[in-house]
Every structure is written in structure tokens, then in C-alpha cells.
Image (cartoon, rainbow, N blue to C red; front, side):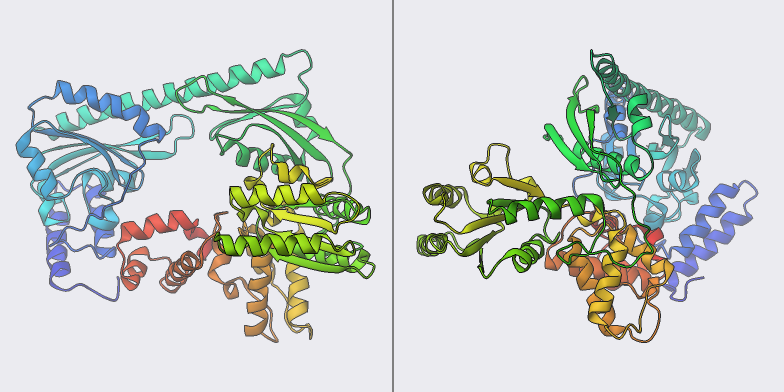
Length: 594
């Protein structure tokens, strides 16, 4: 049992628990729910149903259920019965009730859209117990754990995905009228079955629409390799499935899903694969349904597969002394080196922290031939005085033919300043100028970007999460760099955690983590539990400083409390609903904490 008991409320709950368990009619499902409620330390004397802002009404469950609830609302006019659906976390998504008296009762206990009615928060209740047990349930009167809910009779039925059979949410009927619980349950089962049937119909329509587009792509005159996918389905023709296997297969799907998740992304993108080949993906959206039904990709494979070095080998360095052996990383380095040696203006694209500046510095060391490397950041202010001074400085540096001018993070320039810089470079373009290297983030550069077209070569530096195998090599390299004595090394579990982390801030973040470990740990093996909380998330989202501090505080609290969300939320002074929302936002997966 928990060490900290809330006192009188818990004692009263235990007394009523004994009464419930001694009742011959008490069902094992209800008894088990009460046991969980006590373990969660839910207070039976007060209701705590946290509120979530903006519940997701764009889910398959909501899209299927809302029209059905509207129809039921008309059929049940003036009946003291409320119909509602919740998501799998117990968040009420929608509530329909036409009886004014029942509306007042429901509002008093906050059984309304946005509020969370999982067992963890309000103990035994129809919604929470159906979700926790995965079974239809009627919770009536004193079977409710919290006193304020004991006037209600609730019948709730879990709603499952029609093909995956995963839990999507629940349908709930609530009444204050004494009557047949069997009738309530029969009605609830019937409505839940309608909702599941509609989800299946929507899913089937979306899949049929995607399949139709996929078949059209496969049956064209020269189909080539074809891939189609959405959140539920992956389809590929035989040409693609035989041509792309192993790590290339997983990498291709990872990139395709990232592209499909951006509904505005169109056109063609080249994707480097672990084998050294390049997959050119041309995306077409499937929009036969009301919402995006998925995407179809025509795939063109370029190059030949290369042998990939084993993960256990020492860090591999290119001719420039840069660590990493992923083929698309080596290709980016080689393409950049070719352009730099030729004196071509170069545009390096890549997410923050991938090593764009490190690459330029390595190119300059190897091939600078006495030239100075001048680096200028985007100005921090848009004031005329600052921008005029910045442009004047750029103009003077351009006049120095012996210089290499690195303009860093040009995606941060405002439209007006970007155009003025473009005009300046156009006037200076020619033999009597410095060699210009630009860096920016790929999502910030459009296909018609004039500044990008000034460069004779454009190279995308891959994100660390796509450099398969390089995470371990870089981690070992940084550990030797910051602990040259070689006293520390990584355990297998630690390396597994490092490889699984998506590293939203890329190599910069990995180096920071290893530097911190090297300063704190010496003379012994670094275990998985020694790694900081940021290594245990699944989100690619780049966080602000405040967000990172908040994420780490949540992770440390969860680890200190053995993944107990309630105690961690109490320590942090936030509600459990807020805690869950932040966990989803930061990609915190409870299973990764142990």
C-alpha cells in the first residue's frame, strides 16, 4: 500500500470498500476497481476531475461518434439520460443531454467535455472502470468510489479499433433515474456497436481511397517502385519490396511517414538510405475523403548499395577528420568538399545542431590555403541601424577575394533583409569576391528561393536520427574527447538508450550529454540509469530552454517516484491531467523510464 495516506477520506473509503466487497452481489470487476482506486490514493470525499484544454475532436473515434450522438440526442429528447464519448484516457470529448435537471447534476460533478474521468483521478466510475478493465460495465449508486458520483447510474462500453483492436475510448450512458441497469447496458452496447461500425466504415473508406490511388500508380504505363501509407496501412508493390530490404526498408518508411505527416508537403524529395543509395520520393496526396486519407509515393532508387561497417568498430573519420560512417553523411561531406575545392558558392541545409558549421570549419582547415574564414550570424534586430551596419559589413567582406564568408542561419532573416542580401550578392557575384557559404534549415527554404539559387551547390546535411549507426560512434568519440584518460565506457543498455533517442537537437545535443557524463562519472562504466532524462523521450520536437527544464523536471520526478504520475504531479504542483498532457507533448514514454 502507499506510504502516505490521506487520512479520514481514505479510512472512509476503506470502510465502504469492505461493505462493497462483503456484498454478495458485488462483482469482481467492481471490487478490483475499488482496490485500484485506493492504490491511486483517490479521495472519496472530494471530486478531482482535471480539465484538459482543447480535447481532440479530429480523431477517428470523434468523427464516427459525433453524428451518432446527434441522432440519439433527438431520439432521447426530454429523457433524463446523457450520452457521451471519451478518449482512451478518460477525457470526455462530447456530451449530449436534453433534460435540464440532469444537466445541472452533471455540471455539478464536472462530467462535461474536457474533464478527465479515468480511475486514476476519480476512482471507480463507469467511464474509468470500462477503460481500465477493457470490459462493458455498469456502475450504480454506492459502487462509485467518490461520494459526489453516487447519485448516478452509468453504463459504459469500451470502443476498440475495428482492425487493430486497440482501445480508442468509451461510450457512456448516465442517468439519475432508478431503473433497469440491464436496459442501460443493452442500450450502451448497441450504441457502441454502431460507433465501432462507423469507425470501420470510415477506416475502410480511407483505406479504399488510398488503395485506389495506389493501384492507379501501380497500373500506370511505367509504374516503377510504389509506396502508399497512412497511419494504419502500408502498401508497396513487388518492385519496391524486393529492391529495398533491411535497414533501407525501415529508413524509407521513416522518411515517408515524416513526409506524409506534413499535409502541405508536395513534390519530390531525395532520401539517403543506410546502404549508400538514394531514394527519390515523389509524393501525391490521397484526398478522396473529407480528410487526408494518406499519401502515395513513386520511388526511384539511385546508386548501388555499399557495405555498411559494423556498429562495434571505432569511430570512422572522413578525410576531413569528421566522425561518422553513414553513407548519406559521407556523401554530404564529399559533395560539400567537391564544391568547396572548386570555389563554388555552397548552401548547406540541415536541422539545427547537425554539424553544418563544423563541416565548413573542417573544409576550411583542409582546403583553406591560407584564406580567412569569416563568419557572420543573422542580425538580432530588425532596426534600420543594425541591418544597415550588417549589410555594409557583408559588402566589405565580399570584396576580400581571399576570404571564405560563412553566412550562418540565413533562414532567420526577415523577408526585406533577405531580399536586400540577395541583391547585394547578385551585384557582387563574380570572380572578385569571397567564396560564400550559406547555412539554413531545410524547412525554411522554398523551391523558388532566390538566395538559394545564387549558390552553385546545395547540400543537405542529414539529421542524426537518420545517420544509422553514427550515434554510437559519436558517443564514443565525445567520451574520449572529454575524458581522454579512457577510464569510462558505455554499457550495452546505455548505448541502446542513446541509439533510441531521436536527438531533436542532433549532434550538438549528443555532445552536450556526453560532456556532462564525462564530468560527472569517472573510473566506471556508464549505465543506462546514468543518462540524463532527455535521452528517454520519443519526440523530435526541439524545445526552448524553459521547455527543456520542464521536461527534465517531469522525467526526474517520474524516475524518483517509480513512474507514479500522481506523486510526481503533486511534487511539481500541477494537476495530473496537465502532467499527462505535458508527457504527451514532450514524448515521455513511461516504459522508457525503467
